[in-house]
Length: 115
Image 1 (spheres, rainbow, N blue to C red):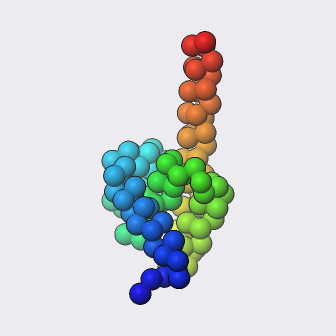
Image 2: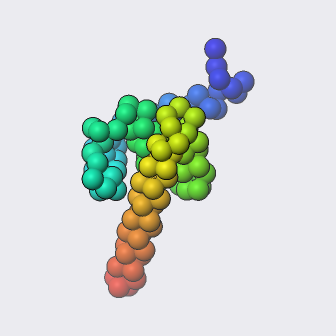
């Protein structure tokens, strides 16, 4: 049985799973840089999974606005993990987003010098 009458949510969930799995080494490396004093292996399975999927969306899926991705991830963490997990996920994803935006700006500036 499909989660949505048109199957759209199911297709997007499959895309998220595939994309996250395909880019897992890059995603994990990015998350590790933003887990101050922690490693992914110290997080619970749900916290780690929420971070990975949200990081994939932030880094590779431009169709979903970043604030929506972070809000959904924090909501999932608060609902299924703990309030503290929500705060952790918010901080890590916010830091990751700042880094990604800075990298895009650097690339744009470097590209301007090429013309």
